[in-house]
Length: 136
Image (cartoon, rainbow, N blue to C red; front, side, top):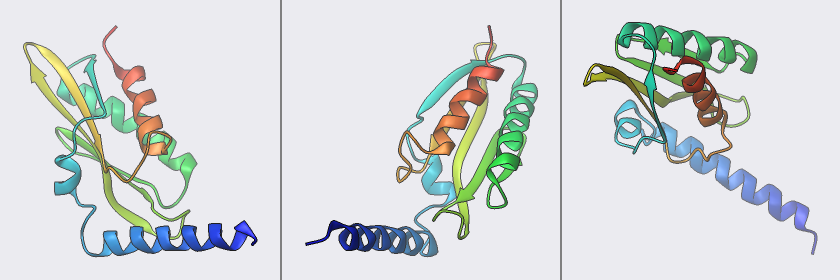
């Protein structure tokens, strides 16, 4: 039995599950906000400076990733949407980086939807952005 059709079938099923999950609202700002942070860092500057730094870094990367990636910078958060199925759709907000001040330090906590593993660009780029903008 040829394994290629089986791999194609598994991939197709995975894509359909992802799309159906997104269409019924499984990937939302609320659900992503409820995930445990995958990264936390002490940032340089205040919340505004840290948010802008991460936002600029992510925007540069999003421009290189392509049309389906969007970065939204808010007062205390950066939201990122990205491709869901290899560039076929603009996905919902699937990454949130939240900033707060605790004990005189600016803290960033990054959360991503659990469907995206450690090799996903959302995680990889966020780790690089946190490193570029963290306190030294």
